[in-house]
Length: 474
Ligand code: GLU
Image 1 (cartoon, rainbow, N blue to C red):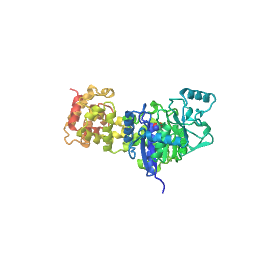
Image 2: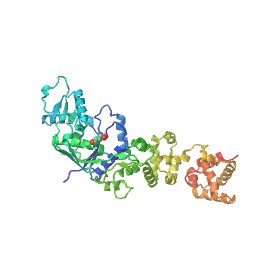
Image 3: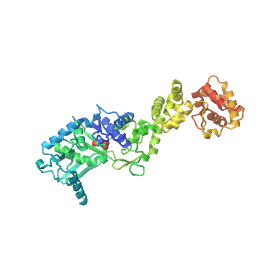
Image 4: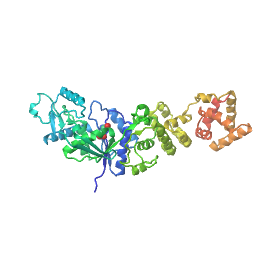
């Protein structure tokens, strides 16, 4: 029997869940799901100064919104500090680590010298073989790994292939600081081991750390998990991802009106491919996902592509589900509260009725909100500039006549209002468009809207007649 797969997402709560982190979480989630395993969540809050509660909430909210659920309880790394210390002591006892009493000045001088000589190994090993009895009094030592000084450290990475480091270039790592706190390098190894992590999937900015961590695994006699270091996300021009190019928190994508399913689909294709397929249902993603299919070159973030994909997901979405998304995004957009206050059974039903036509044109939920403005608008409507230009004395007179023609319709439906309008246009020798446009302006305050008969049906008789009266001449 093979051991079941355990992946983990291990964000540091020093900032929000950014788009790169979300992709890392997605890849871990997909791999665990594909292999019938677990994805664990570890909050790496060992850096007490930079970790915040707000960032932890943002990470948890972001994952929940993206529907990337984790297994078991969240593990907080800092709560395991005693265990990390214990392992450092164990390495000390077995002679795989040693106490280092080097002072700040000594370390600075070592660094300077290494730099001048063009060496990447900074620490000169001054306390490796020295008797701690020679230690300066009152000095709190760090605990360093007694790393191998010759030979190679090798990582067999699923994405990067075989990566080799010469040990002479790697430092004797600090495992425990002078204040007794573990370093990130030690904490990650101990936690991954204790949590039974079988696969580490993370950004390739951690590749060098994999080599350092391998040395700790070796010293402890533990097996290193299977490693996959995924290329970072770059901007559309290949440069480092900037805010303008999408380096934002997941909450920002939510506020921009993207659907979680669309964002997941966009993210899975950033760096991973499966033939030419662009659109994946969640189940298709799970079935097709695999680590060796992740490319080695940096993925490029492309907002236009994300928008198009989102438009596709909006068009495909169930109308009721879209009404729910519409409502939930109101908490994240400016003026959302005003709209929210107007949500009731009537407006919800109107929104649902209008959805088939609204969703055809919207690439984001924000565009959907904007095009649904006419449902929530207060009378008299605010007419936008383009629409106002169409309100001449002639069209206002026409609106008045049209209102009279529509007023006789009692069984108010798209079909009945349509035939009333057609008759009116015929009798007055007008093209339907010449009647529809002033009507649209009076009913929606805009020059574009869903089909005018849908608008009539959605708003209902009383509201339509009242809005027409507002704009009619005389
Ligand atoms: N906490 C690290 C980060 O947020 C990730 C560590 C890891 O995945 O091993 O970059």
